[in-house]
Amino acid sequence: MEGSLKETVRSVVLKALAAWNMDVSDFMVMRDKYAAAVKLPLTKEQYEEYSGYELRRVSSSEAEVKVPIYIVSFDNEWRGDDYMDKEVFVVAPYVNEAQLEEMKELASNATSEHGEED
Image (tube, rainbow, N blue to C red; front, side, top):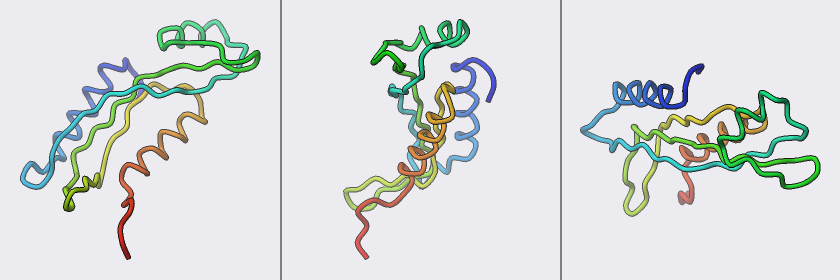
């Protein structure tokens, strides 16, 4: 989605809220930071964008940014002592294609059944 991070998160939360079934699921918005690698050198535009995300050099050819990430959980259930997300939205600023793929994997892992016995 295009737009400011705050407005995008709010928009996604409203979309999730509309889909939330309060009779069977909890509703949560969790905020964290995600470390993403970026190749050096950076363009002026990249530097301006990334400098707000704890930009730091990790080698002569790579830097790291810590971008905010929001996980919106609205379709979930408790299974005994385990908590299972069935559906989540993941919102984070776009850094690069590798980071985008990692975000997709994060969402997939968050909604997969871990440790289920056959």
